Amino acid sequence: MRRRDFIKVVIGSAAVWPLPARAQEPGKPVIGFLNAASARGYERQLAAFLKGLAEMGFVDGQNVTIEYRWADGQHDRLPTMAAELVRRQVTVIAATTTPAALAARLATTSIPIVFEVGNDPIRVHLVARLDRPDGNITGVTQLNTQLGSKRLQVLYEMVGKATVIAYLVNPNETGTETADMQEAARNLGLELRILNATAERDFDAAFAKAVEMHAGGLVIGSSSVFIGHLAELATLAARHAVPAVFENRDFTAAGGLMSYGGSITEGYRMTGVYVGRILKGEKASELPVQQGTKVELCINLKAARALGLDVPNTLVGRADEIFE
Image (cartoon, rainbow, N blue to C red; front, side):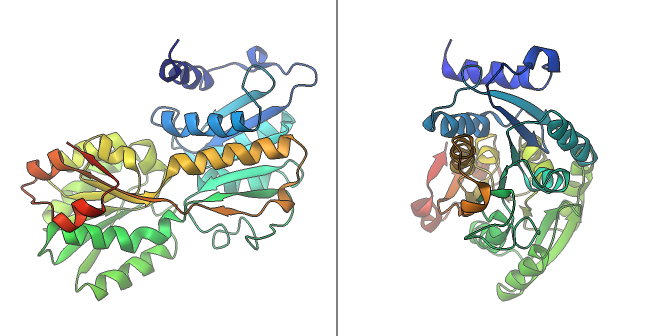
């Protein structure tokens, strides 16, 4: 079986595996994998997590067991899922996405937690400091929320003479990044209009509103809900002819115009490595929070042509990946 097919099987099984089928073998550690989004769409991230875990000598089904919990965008399910993993007495919890990390932190102060988030973990109260986090929690951050102003800038370079830019946020997850975006827009002489969406059902109305307000482009904010439905967002951007930029490379691969953000696969690989180090006996409090340093700009030329945009050579030259 090819590795790609194997990952698809793992993901498809993980969402529905009953607990008896995943019973812990004596002496085999158990990883609780908690995520706010859906298994579908997270193939690359999960593959990267398993790669990092394997680098430390751990393979699911061989010398470790992974219990998956996917909230499918329903964040109110996360506290119950986190509590299930605590009752399961897992060895360590990999809490990927900010809502999952916050739920895990509230669920236990004893089981080690390794998070993977796009937010500043100090600002969202996951840790008090990065160099030596307290207690049972550490992890990896891509700081994607802090790149929002950069996404606004590259979108402005792409669309040219726009005066209004829309900013799509999930009000259940947004924070001070909205104020940062407002300031960045003012510096560019732009008017930033905020659009809200808490679930997939809100997307179409948000894009329609962007068209109604004559927005020259749309910046899609950081949210696990958006990551879980990036293909749908790319489709709606094309349908409504709205130039859009997101943090995730998979948005561009799915037909979106642009993405600019930290390498999410590298973040998940680093998370797997940290989980492996804890399984080997290291303490979460002794592992500094890692900050991803790799930032990727991806451009979809086919989407640009469909929108009638001429991609500036300055952007093409800076792009890490071009989709034809």
